[in-house]
Each structure stands twice: as structure tokens, then as C-alpha cells.
Image (cartoon, rainbow, N blue to C red; front, side, top):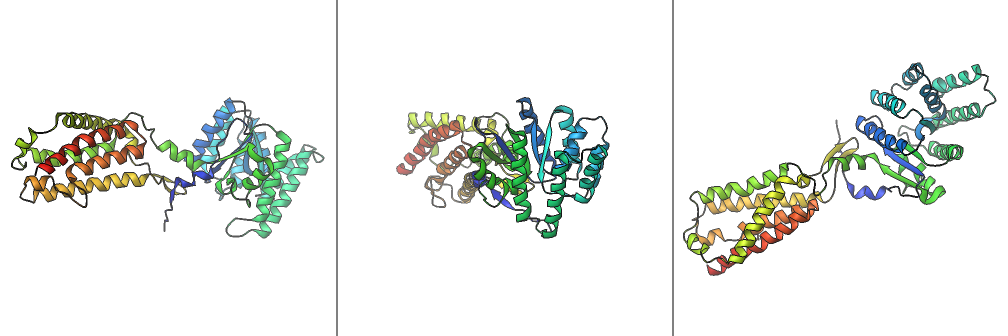
Length: 398
């Protein structure tokens, strides 16, 4: 059974974006998804070009140290052994494997810092201690840190719950992070599960780190980045599918009307139309039509991400515009089934006066607000003044 969670981006308040004073930049992921690994690589490559070298990850200390050793050799033996030991976990997948190889190829001076408790303490952990012993490094800081990480893992798994959420683990992740940051200092990037990167939650790693470090820490969910990448900027050019559908809904009934469904007396009434209102109507029609075709920002921004289906509350404006166009089609159906008099043509529908004019104008105005496109808003207002104004004048004459 697949359960889809519907989420909105009112939760963008969770994100705190970095600024010039930010030293610690956290990113929250859902583990095991290619889309997020691609985003993480692009982010890290950008930071790497800006001089960043220290990458904090949700791994045990010794796992990150094995990655650092692997970064310095030509063979894949170390990373292959590591991935063999993490099979069955959310990180033991081909996308993570490719992600790490891309870092090695394009960001070769990256230094990994593992700040999690000792997962795989009886395999990877024991193997790392053996490596240090074979290298006669039993008295080194590495050996001490690895031993402590193994001890944390043993304690954590004694207390481990089916949910995977543990106060013991969170406390160690916090202390390990602080200790690792003391060792490297400067500007760092951290990639963790999004549960651990919520700055508002005082019970998780990021919330405690914010208490400790203050405003030098930022945190962004990768779902925010993935969702934003799916959207269009208000004035970005392209073909708009929603706009095309909107125009078809607008034009088809008008074409049928023009081919022999006009009310009696309409041609005479047209001759008495106000020239200023007629000019505004034509300018508005042309402007709205062009906007609908060339600005894809009018398309609904909805995206399926690992955590669920994401959208913003502003999608309700798009939905309202679409509903108004459905009502517009219903208005035309009512007109075509009537005696097709002038009274029928300029009638109200569903509570909207002179519905043939007000419904599409309000719909286009809502699309302008939804997309934050000022051109659409202005042309909708111009169209409204001209088109609705003319319809009201004819209605008064009737």
C-alpha cells in the first residue's frame, strides 16, 4: 500500500537560508534518492569552487575516515568493502555510490567528517581499528575517536527503537558534531537526514546546534530546492500548457457563437459601443492571449518528491481560476440551450453578473496573481475595464 503525503510549502518557514555570516550550512535529505544526490553534488561542487573542503555527513567517524583514505588512492577496494557492509541500509545504494565517485573525481580534496554514532561497529568499526593497529596507530587520536564511536554505537543499539529515533543517538550526534567542528573550524557543509536538520526542534541535532552556535548556522531541506527547481520564474519564456487550455476554453464557445449563434439585435448594439472601452478590450485581449501562451509560470507547480506531493497554498488561486473557466463553459451551455436572446447573452450565471465577461477576466487576473506576473495582472485589468464595461453598457440598454 502506497501512502502519499500531501504537503504545502508553508513549511518553508523551517528553512533558514545562509548569509554572509553563515559558517555552518546544513542540508536535510530523504536518504537513498537519486534526485537528492544530484542536488547534493551540485551544491557541494559549487561550495568546493568557493574554497570549501570540509563535508560533514551522517556517517560514523570511522566510515568517513575510510572514505578519506579512499579519496587518496586509485583503487575502489576500500569503498567497495564499505558498501558491502552497509547493504540493507538506506545509504547502501547505487546513487550514493555514484555520488561519492563524482566527489572523488571533481572535488578530490574533499575531507569527510562523520558525526553519527557507530553504525556497523562490528564490521566497519572493527576493520578500521584493525587498520590503525596494523599501521601502529593505537596511540593516535584517530584510534581514540574510533573506539568512542564504536562504544556509542553499542549503546545506541541497546536502546534502539523500531522508529529509529533515539535521544541517545541525537545527543551523541550533537557532541560529535561540535567536537568535529572544533577540529576543522571555518566554513563547512553538512548533509543529514531532514529530521536532524530542523532548527526549530530543540530535541534534534540542528536545534541544539543553533542554541550552541547562534546565527552562524543555516538549514535548508533538499525538498525545498527540488520543488523550487520544478517551478518557473514569473517572466521566464516558454510554452504554457495551462495557458493554451485556458485559451481553448475561452475561444471554442466564442467560435461556435460567431458561426451563427449570435442573439438578435447584437449587430445593432455593437455599433453603439464606447470606442475607448472597445480599445481597452482589444488591448486586453491581445495582452492576455500573448501572456497565456509565452509564460509557463501559469502552469500549476506540483511535484512528487520522496516525502510526498508538494505544492504551495497559492495553487488554490490556480484552482479557482480553473473553476471559473468551468463555470464559463457552463454559462455558454446555458446560453446555447436558451432562446439566445440579448437577455440570455448578457445574463448572470452562478452569481456572477454578465458572466460571459466577468468569469474569464477574473480567472485571468487570478492566474496573474498566482504566477506573480505583473504583465498578466495589468492586461487582465485593462481587459476587465473594456470587456466588462461594454457588457454592462449593453445590459443597461436591455
